[in-house]
Amino acid sequence: MQDKEVQDKIYREEATRANLTFVKRSKVNYGYFLCNKGHTIELQYTHVRRNNWKCEHCYEEKLRDKASSVGYELIGKSTLGSSFRVYKKPCGCIEDLRISNVNVAKDNRETGKVPCRTCYRKSIEEAAEKSNITLLEDINAYNINIKFNSCGHYKIAKKVQLKRFNLECKECHEIQIKNDAEIEGLEHLGPDPSD
Picture 1 (tube, helix red, strand yellow):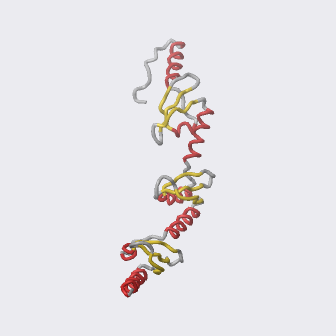
Picture 2 (tube, one colour; picture 1 turned 120 degrees about the vertical axis):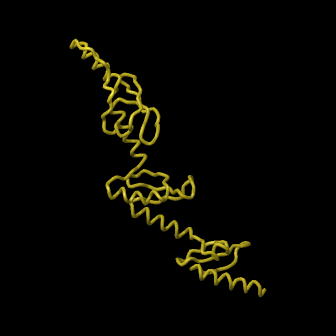
């Protein structure tokens, strides 16, 4: 019995050094502790001894406050892993985001650019519909395969071009230039190689 009391005293001292309060023993090599905000957490004694612990309640509160400071709402944990959380953005979209990217959101809000993949994708789809273009597949974050519905030609285009409504079918454009040249009695030599 005395060994247990001595060991508990050691646990209390180690907890104090780690800014915790020892409550009681748990399972083997684990104990219950109180963090300085009063949350009860179960920790391994070695983590307390090395001051290598984290209160999940405090951590989630910190993440919630950080999200709120950039206009996001923390919804909960993500299925993508421990470095992700589910957030509701100011636009109303809900996305799984890397925790570290929420810090970037504040910088982007200050410049007026709040990136939202869902809203960005919707704006590209709307622009494509207005331009009579079919979106086929994403090549990467910046480029996409498209089909011009008016002529049936395909092209790899920059997504930003779709949003700016400045896409035209180069093949059709070349055909038009060739036809115009023939009407004027000129020979079209093809596109400028420097373009």
